[in-house]
Image 1: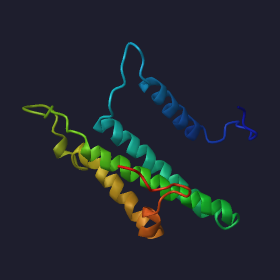
Image 2 (image 1 turned 120 degrees about the vertical axis):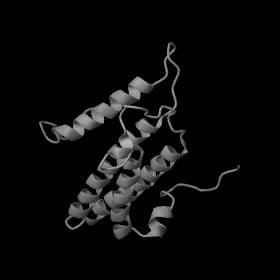
Image 3 (image 1 turned 60 degrees about the vertical axis):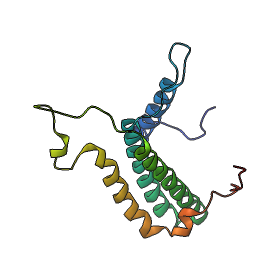
Image 4 (image 1 turned 45 degrees about the vertical axis):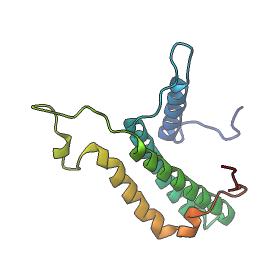
Length: 156
């Protein structure tokens, strides 16, 4: 499938990020010699960082697109909200995974002494910072609304 939009050198970093995600997805695909492995906290932290960056980009695009093209701006704003819901779910999953057993001892690295705090807290700091932006622009009802066309009835 080819794009009708000429690619050229426009947005090379965004294309590189997309290519990186495609590569990572292919690399994690289960194979005969290697079964699929579950996500770990480091993996979800990196994914959360990517999602929050994408969330910020969608926020900017929605704000700048809305005045000249209101319908497109509304769709971008909806994508912005749905992406926040995905980001929050990744953050929640991160905290449900077990903590690695390896704790630094003796003369080893002491990440708890880092000025920004232990690395495990960076996901929370990032999430809180992004959450402030979300709460300024989105109502709780919008954040909790199901996606359009999504039915919430399940037999459990």
